[in-house]
Structure formats: structure tokens, C-alpha cells
Image (cartoon, one colour):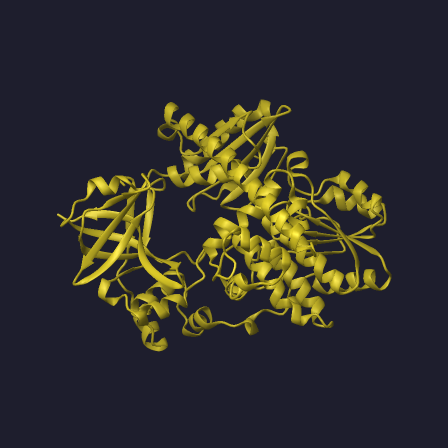
Length: 565
């Protein structure tokens, strides 16, 4: 791609020292250094870390108060109402907390607001639901850090609130009985990157220390791994331990709801990967919330009937298929709007809106457009004189900071550096666009808008041995904060004429110094026409593994190609 830059640095002295100290290939050591892992002890934990490395949950400010208040509610037979968000992180947080509290003997119920009706967050009027269900204690999961009006009214009504969240707070913290949020400056917790379900797991961990519940923690961790991956949390620290251990035997799980979901995803009895969760399991759970039926996903995991759970899993699959069609239509409409108007040539920040777009898919579409144009994208759906938007950004532009500077125009907003949601009056859209574009113009250079491939290590095909792959596997799971490594091999020969696959992909057989590998160019069918047998190329790629008839096959997933002169 003309707009693509390869960024590569030769092996460092730190990598050489790390390779000697740990007895690992230099290429693996360089990948660790590229991830900021230079200390041999930290590197060893990263490669071989066990669950014994989990932090004490009581390091998190508010944990003692939260545990004591929950135990009081249980001992007094007080009803507890769990408030959750409608995405995978929120739904599964509700599931594991409700299960854990039920195990402890609590009278526990839950509520997840309809995304399409209420949007994100805990609204003040939700107190009426608490009163209606006669709950004395509310516990929020994956939301609530900005629920100041809700907690204020709860206090008036004599209702206590415990907040568990991982989002950034507003200017004022809610008046809650306890707030568990690792991103707060005074939280005291060493791991700031937990997903919402990770925070809930720490609460369950604290509750289990004095109860006969420790044996359940491994099962809860399976849900934590799914929620953490689906929320695109950084796979470092505890998140890495959660995901690595949670995925260990996920495909063999006997939980009725989880087993039914794995079956509909075609993953039953298989080794489940981060990609499987991100592209197969997560979207089916998410589809319920995106289409305004989050309660359906929760019901799946509390069903004690195989017949019912299979029926619910099938409905989630159908909802996901429906969501995919709506998403594809929206993406094509947005892409056409951008390209036909030349918006990517005129603006560094793409902002689009349409009355027809579904609020549940604009975030996913924004993410795809962000990847395609390599610039921040914010998509809106217009309804009732309001613009409801979801945005995604590139690493060079923290999008939440941009919204912070435009907050006077917004009715509500939230998120983090890479993803945001917001609502504003439709009449303010023109001014909002002008302000955002001014900020983007000032902070984004033309270089920032070029796609970059960060090559981790140069390698010869002959070095990709079984021993190398064994060390490579220790680097997984891959995701945000620990991206899939990119390798560079120079002077590979196209050993046979490339083929087009399904009209949109390309397939190569590459040879270098007597070693052959199959290589695939996803969504790059043009490569099959551009390159000829016998040509010499430099190729940037990641390693791709697939299972067929019980055997694991490795191929190269090509990121980019440069023709050698």
C-alpha cells in the first residue's frame, strides 16, 4: 500500500542480554523488548506466569467496605440489585456476580437497561426500578462511575450503592457506599487496565477468601477471559493471566449456557483462541445488547435446561446474523459517503451521521472505517432531535481528550483514548464538527495518518523451527498491549503463481533458502494479479495457526509486500 510505512529496528543490546539470560531465541527476546519488557524477572513472569501472581484484592480502595456491606445485606436477607451494562463485559459481569452472590446465599436480582431506549449509564430515574423491586443495596458493574444524580437520590431513598467500574470518572465522584475502580488516582491498585469484569472478579476473589467459594474462581475466570477480550482490554498484567488461564480448557466447558454458545459457534471441544472469542463468541453475546435484548444473553447463562439454552443460543446466533447485515449495509453507506465526497482527502477526523443508521452498530462500523482510512471516525445516528454517536480512534489521537475539549456542546459522553460514545443536540452538530476538525488539524500530522506496520523482528524461514514455535507460543495470548508479532523476511521467492481465493483474498507459496511456507493475503486479491511466479519480495507477516482433522497447520498471514529491485 502506498500509504503504508514499515517501521523496523535491528536487534537491541537489551534483547541480546534477555535472550542469553532466559535461554530464548533472539527474535522472541526482541519482541519482549518491543513490548517494553526488559527486566529478566518480569519477562519470565510474562512468559510463564501463574495464577499465584494475582494481586491481593484488598489493595483496591473500597474493597473492605464493599465486602462488609455485601455480607451485611446477605446476613439480613436484604435484596441486592445488580445494575449492568449491555455489552459483553457488562452482561458477563452481571452473570458472575449474580452467581457468586447466589452461592453465598444472597437474595439477588439484576437489571440491564435497554440500550436503544436509555443509552449508556445509570440514569436517575432507575431508582424507581430499585424501589419497585424492593432492593436495599445496588451494585453496579461496568458502569456507574458518573452516576452522581442516581446515587444522590438513592441516598435520599435510603438505598446504598456500591460501584464497580473501570471507566474514567467525571468531575465529581458519586456518593456511594464503596467505589471499586482501578483507574481512580487514589485507588491504590497496581493494575489499572482491568476490564469491568476484572474488577468484579476481584470483588468475588475478596468475598471468596473467607467463604467456601475459592473452588469456583477458575470457572468464573472463563467468563472473565471472554469479557476482557471482548472489551478490547490491554492483555498485560492480570488481564493476561485471566485470559491465558480462562481460555485453557474453555472449549471443554460443561456449563450449560456456555456449552450451548460454544456449540453454535463451532468451538465445542476445540482449543479456543483470543480470535475465536473476539470474532465468534463475543459478537453473539454483544448482538443481544446491540439489538436491544441484553436480557436474552443473561438468561442463557442461568438456564438449567439444555433445550432452553440451545434455543437461546440459536436466537443469539440469529440476532448476530441480523446485526451483521445491518452493519454491512451501514458500512457500505458510510464508505460511499466518504469516498464520493472525498471526505478522507479533506478531513483528518471523519464525522458522519444518518437517520437510518442503527445505534447498536455504529461503533463497529466506526472501527472498520478507522482501520480502512487510518484516522479517527465518529458516526452518529439521528433521532428525536439528538445525535447519538460512537467513535474509534488511532493511537496517535486520544479521542476522549478531544471530547473533553468539546464537552460544553455534549449532553453526555464517556469512553477512553481509543473509543468513545456521546450524545448532543442535533442543532449543535455543525459547531461540534468545526471544533473537532480544528483540534484534529492541530494535533494530527500527515505522517500520523499513514498506516504503520511495526516489524518486531527480521527472520529467515529456516529459523521458524518447532523449538522457535514452542517459545513463540509463550508470548500468547495476543491482543491490545501485546499485539500479534510481525516478522520480516527479505528476498523470499514466489514459488508458484499466486491464486485468488473467494474473489477477495490471495494465496502464495513462498520459498526462501530451501524452506517453503504457504502465505495468505486477506482482502488483498489484487496481489494475486500484481505478483508473478519467480519474483523476489520482502514480506511482512504474522504467523497464523489453524486446526484441521486434529492437526495444527501454520501459514503466514501477510500484512504487506514490497517488490525487490
